[in-house]
Image (cartoon, rainbow, N blue to C red; front, side):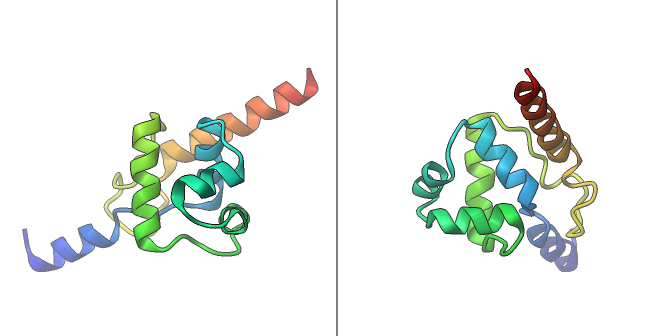
Amino acid sequence: MSNEQNKRRRRAAYVWKPEMIRALREHMDLTQRELADLLEVRQQTISEWETGLHTPHRSTQKTLSMVAERAGFFYNAQASGSTDGDGAQQNGEETAERVSADQRTAGAA
């Protein structure tokens, strides 16, 4: 593997979109404050990530990936091998859509 491929591979590892962070939190049945305590950040920071105002630092994205794996939250951050995130997050976005649909269904009942 070339040096360029190694660099590209390292950059592509962790890409968390706002809807994925919220889906992970809801999958774990946590409040923003509880997730913040787990990640050692402020509750406001979680809110900002979920609304897309800010994005987690690379090290925090790695931690999010480890937390997701431990929680059984399927999130394939390395699927596409690129940093654009389109294919890399397809499975996670499907999970986020499922969580949203479940909430709408629960709210209608």
